[in-house]
Amino acid sequence: MTTLTPDTIAHLAAHLERAELEAFAVDKITDDHPGMDEDDAYAIQHEIRRRKIGRGARIVGYKAGLTSRAKMRQMGVETPSYGFLADYFAVPDGGEVAMAELIHPKVEPELAFVTKAPLRGPSCHMAQVLAATDFVLPAVEIIDSRYRDFRFDVNSVIADNSSSSRFVLGGRMGRLEDQDLPSLGVVLEKNGEPVAFGAGAAVLGHPASAIAMVVNLLGRRGEELPAGSIVLSGSITEAIAVQAGDAVTMRAQGLGSLSVRFR
Image (cartoon, rainbow, N blue to C red; front, side, top):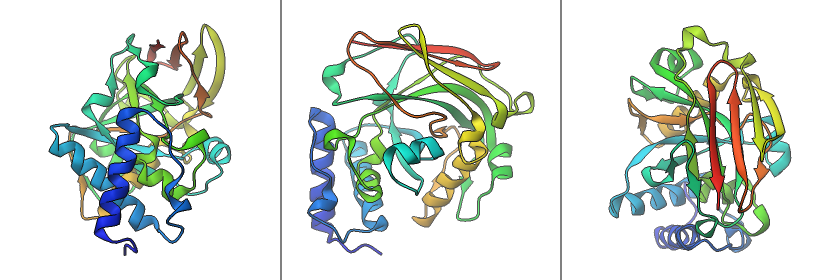
């Protein structure tokens, strides 16, 4: 149950979305609204989503956030979350990202699940996710908190669409029957040098568990995950900061590689 008024939720959504679209940092919103809870945070996120849809953006999927122990430690939070992916977040494999459009981006190696059947919570489990998945792909998520110095608490980051910004899909489509996702290894390289290593088990023990978590959180608000959705399962390693001129490559065991440049 939300504690903020509808007007406050609308105001905070407009404030955070403007920070995203115009690429400037703001103070975390719980500084001025310390009593806001998780329901308030998702209400703000969903209002941002509504605003984007109203302007013609298409929602292509979701991302699980804060699902690896490394990421939880790095960000000082303990609760996973989710955010939505708008169509304009997508960057082609080998493409470029303009730093002027972002504030202080970081990159994360992830696995993307593409669904072939709808999923609905609140009791979705990993087996249902696996049955509803068409294939998986390597992905790099480019996160970009709108909060100054990447400092936030869990309710502030949920409201800020879980730091969603851009994402890149690439490599090869992998059928689940051919993959051992918990042991699937990834390497993240920056400018040709390896900077982070990990395996799928870093994401809640199995990346499909993160997808079930997203479905169940959506189910709390009476929403389902449609067939054909892209869902990023969360970072396998800590997030790595990037700047103009950097080139990032992700290599995933058995699934090839993808790359992105920053200018």
